[in-house]
Length: 147
Image (cartoon, rainbow, N blue to C red; front, side):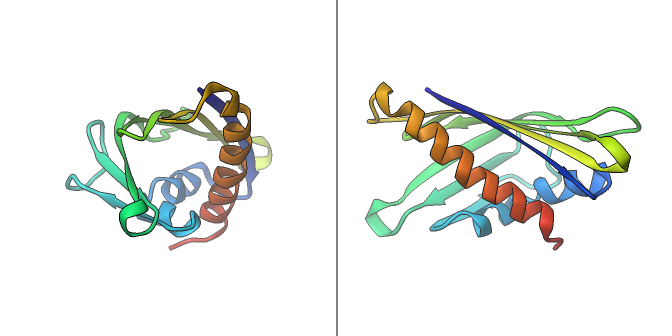
């Protein structure tokens, strides 16, 4: 099981950082060969189902996720979202926390634990590095650009 985390502090209000990170369809724009869809009606809440489809043709696979914690930021309370990965290929979870940082900036903490079927445990360190790199780029892009 590969685990990684990353942090970002950005010149955005907490609610805007949260909004940018939880526009699920935009996640696919930042990850090569990936399309993200939401299979339940809006708005996002506990029970929302998100599917990331990665790959090309017969080499593609689905990464279905369920929102199990949905606590948007309110007043001085940080926002927290947890997605449980429930696929046949990818298992684990991801959490996004958005809180007030220094100088009115938003601080984002992304934590993830991922298991990929068919990959042996010795590959976990490489998978964690790759995950940190890919999701770091994704988080940077999501926070940098508004819809």
